[in-house]
Image (cartoon, rainbow, N blue to C red; front, top):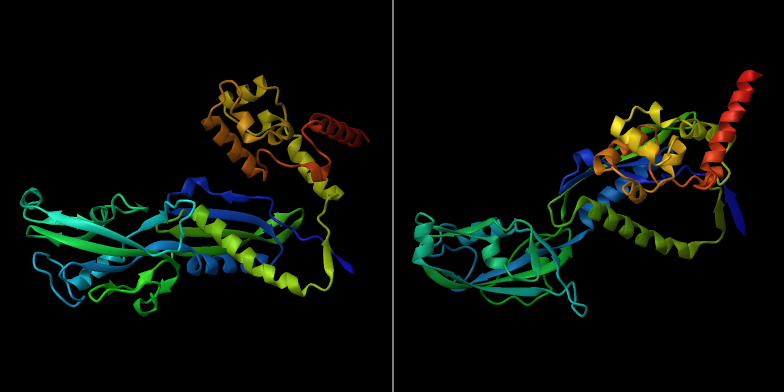
Amino acid sequence: MTLKYGKFEMPEKIKLDEASKTATFARFIVEPFERGFGHTIGNALRRIMLGSLEAPAILSIRIEGVPHEYTAVEGLIQDMTHIVLNLKGALLRKLALGSDADPREVKLVTKMLDITDEMIEKGGGSYKVTLKDLMANTDYDIVNPEHHIFTVTKPMTKRVDLRVGMGRGYVPSERNTDFEPQIDEIVMDTAFSPVRLVNYYIENTRVGQDTDFDRLILEVTTDGRISPVEALTFAAQIGILHFQVFEGITTEVIHFDKGEKADNRDREEILQKLSLKINEIELSVRSTNCLANANIETIGELVVMPEYEMLRFRNFGKKSLTEIKQKLDELGLFLGMDLSRYGITRDNIKQVIQNYLQERAGQVQV
């Protein structure tokens, strides 16, 4: 049996705030949601990103001649407790895996650390061992290669073993059981989560004449092991995976009204925007001339153009593209829009706008 449900307002795209974007921070704006769904989606994504994403981290350390973590090491300024704490700040990216490699296999990284008198003299009486000294030329990308691990004051040659594995969340040392530690190997508490902070906010947004729909704003901060875009992508896939289990209890299928035929009010609103002339949105002279040379006269003709085609126009650069995208965003529009729900295509856009303007002119005369 099939039940028919009314239309749910759904976002058409996710906007990434380019102005505030960095390598470790991004702000995402998603709208419109039905009232209440902003909190539902935002809180679910936040919890998944903070606790369920995987990244590599150091599980243990073994330094030749050091029996346990509660000891000082001759020639090192830091004791083993401080060295372990410093190692917890190591940031490693995903394994560069071959086709047959197991991504969750614990890897042993071995480094023969050879500190000479010359290296100590060059450092003014000490040599600072950084993460790149221990992890260079391995299967891992180092996000913070200059991260300080310990300081050497005497020449020494020691073997250092590090175990690195994939995981999620925070795992105390007693639960790191994916390997058999050696007698003098120090197993560490491990923070696998690559996401440091997720905030979400809900604002009101407008759909037609109604202003009580949800705008979801997600602010994601990572530690560099993954990007904020990757964090949101992975969290969405994990959420979808867990919802799939509930498909097994389906007794009746719901058919959702997707609003393929927009009502007159929505169509009138979008056509008002599409029929605007290019010179009505106050673009720079350069951008206006570029669009004129491409025979683009209205906003409707502009929004049906994909971004990559815009860059093919003569004298049209990224600066002009950024300006146009900003102006369109102020109107709630974007390049490459699918207007098929309004019966508008790239082939008929000019005729549709012409017919609309003629209808309006006729109404005014009446």
